[in-house]
Length: 176
Image (cartoon, rainbow, N blue to C red; front, top):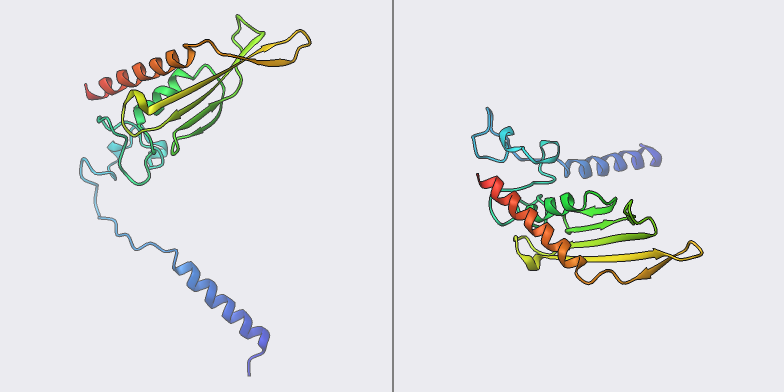
């Protein structure tokens, strides 16, 4: 007769084996090189991180890639946003949610002033209402502490316009 300890070990191994076998993949890959125009073609990996499908950039259409693993927002708006905000340190960037949060940035010409930007891409289409920018501004007080002050009225709008213009440039460049 088997000992209870041995039975417990066999049962645990069986459960673990069944659990791991459920993780297997039954996807069959065709043999030979992928056809041109298919997602598996290495020629289609331009703009993808590591040649995979984690981040897909630019498809030549207004919409972001429609694949299940592509970014969840318009690729041109995403890249244009990162381009436009490249002078600021990025604190957080979520390509799936379309959120870019910068850290505080002090321009060299105004060391007693700093800015922070929260940017939200709200659409998979390249549209003006698919982008929302919030700009925060602080000034250094006499004791050296930072105090919140209102950002200049048109700063957020000007930043949105610069991003939209860059996104349009990228889209036009990708169709040529």
